[in-house]
Length: 320
Image 1 (cartoon, rainbow, N blue to C red):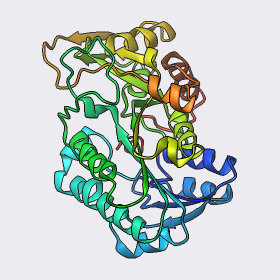
Image 2: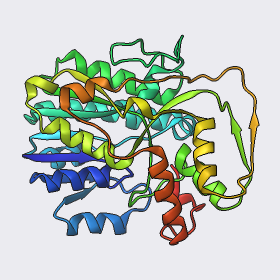
Image 3: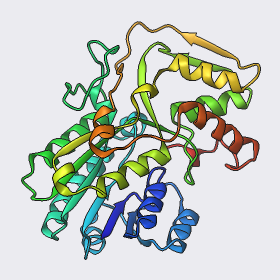
Image 4: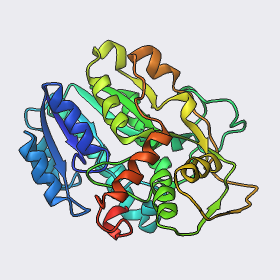
């Protein structure tokens, strides 16, 4: 099987490619290297990945990337609420129009399987966040990013394209990866408290689910390892049910590992996102379970910081 991974040189993408190469698949990457990952891209090539530098919005780049491909893993996106809010038109062009064009071109090229990276942010603000929501629960996106993901999900699940489509709603990602990000809650809180900075936390009582970046890549592989009859037209939340945390819980976990942590909380009675998610379906249907917990990720980030693995952890290259 030849698999195209869009955004394959990104935070989730590099680990996903490693999983697919390890499984014996041929892997091709389409990535614009927006965040300056040229060195990381060279390492991908050295691992046996075919690299095509290009933009998912470019018809010629899509055509070349899709040539001879059996499956597409679509990770490429302007990721996260702040990045999308900064330039809504650009995020629409990439996340919506780019995805629509890729889906159409993939179908026309005879691609059999399409795996789409979505988000648990699609659940937005739940009426009762104490009860974990399943894949069949109401979608209530409250950010532009989540609205865009919901729209592409709906297009894929309608099935008119003729491919076997699977949507993966990832929990909030954390953990060490070759293309490191420090604009994600667990990584950011750990970095700031390790560096001796005062951390001001807003809405500490609201719930989110979390999943390690390596487990995100493992989930993609798990889907492609299954017959089409098992995963076709399906949505899977990616994470583990007991890895739902409040920001307060994250801070307390970091504080156990960082002496003299300085933290204050800013009370908020309303937060647009407050959701606890069930991950029983992916465990039962795919036999998938995560291998890391948030405390594991915190320890891993601290070890990387202590070893000066990331250079300047506050540099702009580490955020989207």
